[in-house]
Length: 186
Image 1: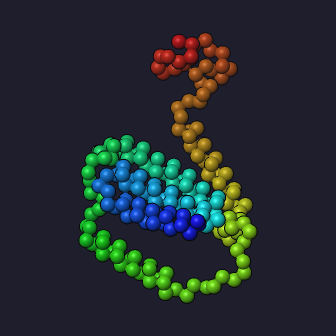
Image 2: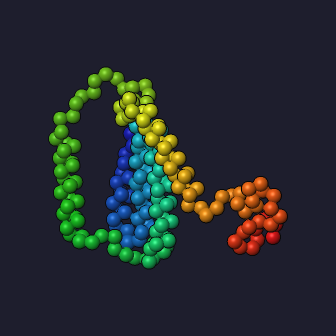
């Protein structure tokens, strides 16, 4: 059962990844890329790394949604449905892609892969985290909090006024100081 699901997800990931470059619409290419990345997330979950797989699925879904929003906002073709070319120098790109694929495939097939020693860990996610972070876990957690604080501070500084400015510091103003009509007390 797991082998069948693995191969279905693997083939779908590769096929939808190829279709990213075959579609002539940015919207269709975006959804094809999302499909490919969701299949990769499913493969990671299938390999026993549940947390990492869920993070991939969530991160890629949100990333593609943000990309679609920016595509609608900034593209000359807002819906992304009108035909357009997604590649330039098709022959040169095809040659480079073919050579890179052949090199990577040869590396995979010819590399002296080590045999497994010992048994699989009981919690692969924990082992992956420890091998990636190791003694730097506290540093990474602190960095995460610092980045979060930076994001919050940026949003606060980007707004012209705070939520209490409309009704005064003590929230007792009879009329809200709104720049447009329709606010509280009008």
